[in-house]
Amino acid sequence: MDNKEFNPKIVAFVCNWCTYAGADLTGTSRIKYASNVRIIRLPCTGRIDYMLLLKAFGEGADGIIVSGCHPNDCHYTSGNFHARRRWIVFRRLCDFMGIDIRRIVFSWVSAAEGAKWADIVNSTTSLIKEIGPYIDYQSLNNIETKEIRNA
Amino acid sequence: MLDKLKLKSKQLLESREVNSVLGTVHGTGNRIRPMFIREIKDIDNLIINESPSINLAAYIAQADNLKKGKVLIIASMNELKAIKQLSDENRINDEQLRVIGVIGKEGIIEFNKLNEVSDYIQSTQSLPSAHDNSLEQISSMTQDQRWQYWKQVMEGCIRCYACRSACPLCYCERCAVEINQPQWVSVASHTKGNFEWHIMRAIHLAGRCVGCQSCSNACPINLPIHLLNRAVNKETDERFGKTQSTQSSTHCMSSFSANDFEDFIK
Picture 1 (spheres, one colour):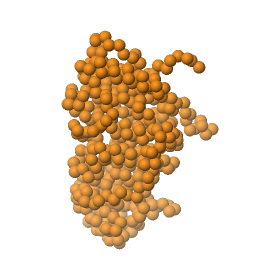
Picture 2 (cartoon, rainbow over the protein chains, first blue to last red):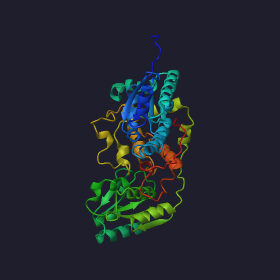
Picture 3 (cartoon, each protein chain N blue to C red):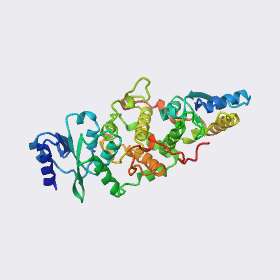
Picture 4 (cartoon, one colour):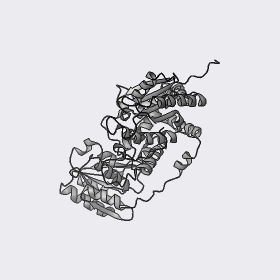
């Protein structure tokens, strides 16, 4: 057993126009925040496919942040509105299937909200530290396929 | 009722108004199977399926089946709902399809145009069909119990895609599970890929599923996968309005409202 503190892997899917710029502002404002986050920049929240989130969990993420422009601020007018509907449905389905939805944090962070971004990352990191690694989903990788199991 | 149905089908087939009749006939054993009837003599084999487990609309959703000429479909309530959704999505049109509805007590209803089907569906109070309470049961479990339950279900899935084939609204010519560059969903019948597949299936049918349960009925392992669709549809119905009765063809997942309510986005 290693006594090292659990360092969660957090993947952030952010939109290019608001949250990515916001995170940039966090850096240029020299606000320090948890280094657990890996930012993936996408053109718009409308591009953030739910399969990306599942992939992140499948590849070992313990937490996910999904963030984009505030409603009415979308660079492409309506990408975040479409995304919001999708999140509502996806979140409900995940909850129904017993996927831990506390681990998926959704937020709106504008290009001016550098401090909010740091806050989101820090609060998510401490939340995931509290609830531990997402072994449930990651352990799916270790389940043997049926043929082997039945042999 | 059956005689009337046969007579009407014969007339339409004889006058070449339709090229084939899609209905159910007796199969081997006690099975009931779907059939495209092209010869008038075969019309006599038609039966009325009292407890439909398959949705015939799945056959007309495949474009290939409509290429050979106009089809007359013998439709129960489930088929009618699927036909409405398919025509809302511009998948089928009046040149391709004639519909005869066979509805329990009401008997035989002839639809000359597809929008008559839509009107009929909207006018009938869709009675909450004899649903069991498994949705509520699962929802009332703890998160871990739900996870264990669905993990067990997903371990059973053999990924035969019978659910996809049986579904009247899963009609993409190239399904996302068959796309391998990039490979979104692992193709092996492995629990993780199974999760991804069934989540994807449920999301793609969000607000579109007509609740016929032919996915679960077709499942060789009898997995209760229709519950996923039902859970998703419950959400879309409650949040974005009853999808079955919306007039427009834009379904809820391809549209939005600036006032969509959520309470989880920080």
